[in-house]
Amino acid sequence: MDSVRPAAKTLGPRPGPQPTVSPHSAASDVLRRCEVLGFALRGVAPVQPSQWADHLRAWLASGKHGSMEYLSAELDVRLSPERIFQGTRSFIVVGDQYARRGDPDRPRAGLGRIARYARGRNYHEVMKKRLHSLADDLRAAYPGSDFRTCVDTAPLLERELAHLAGLGWVGKNTMLIHPRVGSYFVLGVVATNLELQPAAAPTPDHCGTCTRCIDACPTNAITPYSVDGSRCISYLTIERRDQIPPGFHAPMGDWIFGCDVCQEVCPHNSERTGEVDVGSILAAYQPRRNGFDLLDVLGWTVQSREEAFRSSAMKRAGLALMKRNALIAAGNSLRDCPDPRLLARIRELAADDREPGTVRATALDVLEALAA
Ligand code: B12
Ligand code: SF4
Ligand code: SF4
Image (cartoon, rainbow, N blue to C red; front, side, top):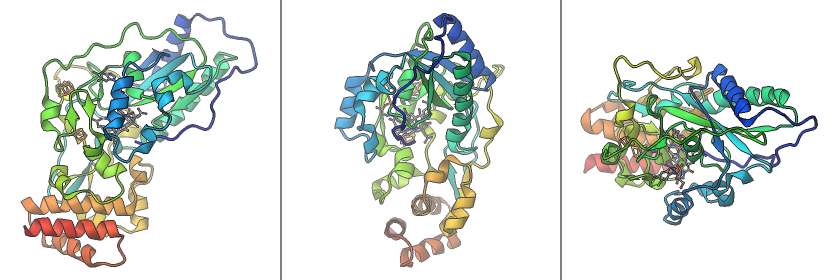
């Protein structure tokens, strides 16, 4: 989940008469349009400085962002989101649900699992397309107003904005959790210079005395309301480009892209019989697979990786990174379930001079651990 500064920095005012509609009516209209576009969650957040500035500063100072340097860039904007675009008066915040509470998974030996958010089509594309159409419609409906879309790619604390917009609370695993939907959803934001009535009140915290996510995290990355990004499997498998220290290999289990453990164990994501889901999951998020065969990944070429990742959020993971992750998962799989072909392939990669250094070195680490 990366972040890049958007090019345009100013919101309107655009030519034309200013809207005369009240902030309350405008917000109702905007939220109805979001519903029509299929956003399962939607709300309006006020423009105010972050309440958690000290928390974020301490998080960065202790290096919990690992190599994600972009998180410390433009800190002033993250902490004072009105600076995102000059003239911002409100944030429209939406959520796309990609999996249901209690969504089952079928791990098996030899399969490298991918996180649920990446199993269907690329959420950046699915959200951006609808947010752009929302922005175009709103520009026409509210002359003089301007709207700019942000999905992951702007220096905003999206979860804090979503909390302020009434979409849920920030749990101890730092996920934004909706009391009925759970946390299997992604967020998108539209900044506007139109004044919109914000949500009446943020959702209260429902974590209580629960510590399931903290206890279950395989790499001990969670302390209450804080994730050490540099230890998180999502970071290790997607963001970290170099070799992964062998101490993390066993805890990574079968995950080769992202991790869902702290969401799977959360009681707010467990199945509830008789309860109707809030919102619905768009067809675009229909899972195409829950993982890849490890032997296949270890044999991928540039072209086969490209085909496998077409219109997927995984497409930013390069070939060497995927082979590195698959090697680690293969080592873990072999410990429980011997597979001569998989073992032979790891040996081949360790000895193949044409493979990148990270791949060969990871293969050697895995072989060493298997021999121990
Ligand atoms: C960097 C990043 C990561 C990093 C770091 C994660 C982290 N916890 O910070 C890594 C690569 C590890 C990661 C992993 C994942 N990510 Co990510 N990630 C981001 C990104 C780009 C920035 C987050 C950030 O600023 N982190 C810095 C920390 C300190 O901030 P924060 O955790 O967001 O918390 C702030 C506020 O929530 C506030 N706060 C609000 N209320 C409260 C209450 C208390 C008590 C406290 C103390 C603080 C607090 O405090 C913080 C500010 O200091 C956002 C998109 C965005 N622009 O926001 C997506 C985002 C947070 N990720 C998302 C997802 C889906 C994931 C994964 C589930 C993917 C996966 N399955 O592998 C995992 C989940 C791991 C986890 N438990 O957080 C979604 C979350 C949706 C949701 N329902 O919450 C986002 C919003 C992307 C999106 N557009 O939907 N991610
Ligand atoms: S995503 Fe996985 S590794 Fe990251 S905090 Fe959650 S359980 Fe821990
Ligand atoms: S597992 Fe428990 S502590 Fe963790 S986020 Fe869910 S409710 Fe909160």
